[in-house]
Amino acid sequence: MGRTTLFETLRTSGLRGIFTRLHDGFIYRHHKRYNRQFDNEFDLDTEESIVLDSLDFEHPSKFDAVDYEATPIQIVRRLIRQAKLDPKSSTFIDLGCGKGRVLIAAAQAGFANLIGVEFAKDVAETAQKNLRRAIGTTDNTNWSVETIDAGSFIPPRQDIVVFMYNPFGKSVLEPVVKWMCEHSAAGFRVEVLYYNPQHKNLFDNIERFRSQKFSVSTRFVLSILSWHDAAWYFSTHKEIDDAEH
Ligand SMILES: C[S@@+](CC[C@H](N)C(=O)[O-])C[C@H]1O[C@@H](n2cnc3c(N)ncnc32)[C@H](O)[C@@H]1O
Image (tube, rainbow, N blue to C red):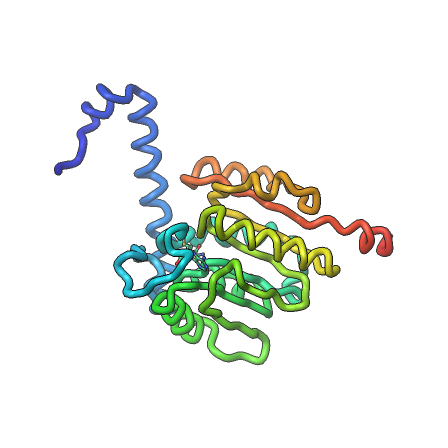
């Protein structure tokens, strides 16, 4: 089937349809350049998407999984810059880490401890290969990629920054939110950066998490240079906060 002409778009969707189409094209071209630069810098391919059904693996959570597609590198960097937790003493976790782009960006941003969680074995192996290539084994950065379901992950006993690019539906996010609450109740701070937050109501409905407001420039970038919105949450710790003040 050929591409729809602008005239057809105008006829079926009006001026708003034309604007959306031109804007989509602009976003796509803008990020393509930066994503390619990132891949070229380390000789990686994090850009190409992967349809999970094309992989030879079965998993009970596959029905609720989102295919691999990487967060645009500029958006990743901007969201990571918002994180409040100390990059040296906390652990950065990408739930559904795909080929590892976000983890590499987090290492570049100074995070010393990184964990990728990816349930598709082939994809997790690619992430490991990419991290080895881009970060290597330095004394300053500890990283690992765990091939497990995000719902069964057990976080390290540290403050954690958790990144998610809409990796899965509610059936997995519910147990994820549960272990986050338990981690917070155990006295560790939990910060969540959730890109394309399709199920953000799971956080909005929990008292333990407080929604944070992105900076004006980040909100501007998300509205102009992104197809998706993002949400940011921080766990509340009355006990710790009272003791610190
Ligand atoms: C939209 S991609 C995001 C990739 C990466 N976080 C990024 O932003 O560049 C979602 C990833 O989540 C993984 N995934 C889906 N369900 C999962 C689950 N239950 N446990 C762990 N990983 C999962 C998929 O295999 C896919 O690689």
